[in-house]
Length: 233
Image 1: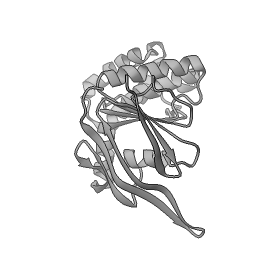
Image 2: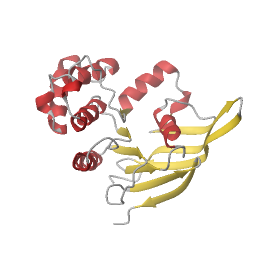
Image 3: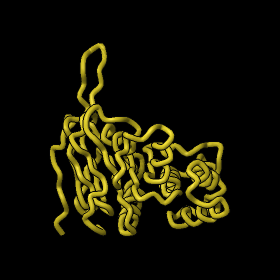
């Protein structure tokens, strides 16, 4: 961990949904602080509130009550246009099923992510994409379509795309759930390296995780924080 700054803060965050069947409380009064450079696993069984918490963090959805503040920005006060720009520059999202655009090459997927946000100068985008693919370990696949890659290679490419705009936060939703054990370990080591370079890495998973893989393991149960275990060594 690089410092103890409270970089991400949830204050009294609740989220509920109302339907004909009544009200469902997905999150219940969550108070949570995450420091810059931490590697955090958010775990829990299906329906525990992990995905809802992820949506609050990324600004995809809004709390019913409470605030989410990231690096002094109260995320849900931003309008849709400003939120999209803010998210693109500050949070890289790695989806469970990669969500690479199938008709674009891997290199083009990365460049498109930079085109949307506009943080990286246009003349630097191709070179940056090539550098990221080299760092992630799939430089030889730059000009291939996603379908030509294995699941592990696609996940690496998806991580490279999430890093395209050099965001300070990387959020990964079940990033190793569809990978073999060897590839999953390689992805975990990559997250260690990214956190070591100062990025805050938050992984949402239903898998069993160990304290050696993360600085903190936060357990959700029925929309509440049931445990917050910090690595002591």
